[in-house]
Length: 108
Image (cartoon, rainbow, N blue to C red; front, side):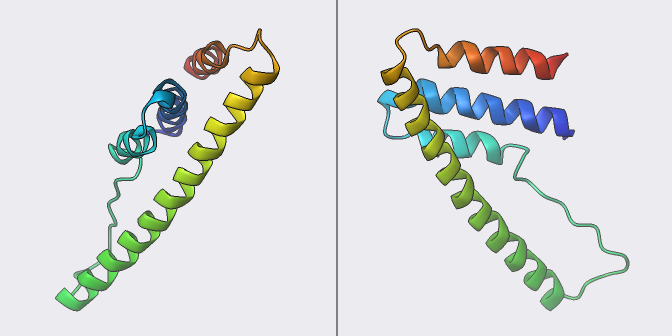
């Protein structure tokens, strides 16, 4: 997946997070969306790894991805709170339009 595609996916996740405000599952849905391609991984190693090496590599990657997932969940939670505060303070605020414009800029 290219960097632009990852950034577009991130904007999509923010939009999903914003749109899912009425649901308690918005963080879970957003993280699931990121896992489909963005958080997937493949490690190429010169030569062959024995079974212990393969297990150690898998455990390390799983641990890193889990922590990164929680970090991302924190960012999404913060975005949701900031977007709500912004809309509460400014009636003319349109978070969805801002996200849409950012997505269009990335597409160019």
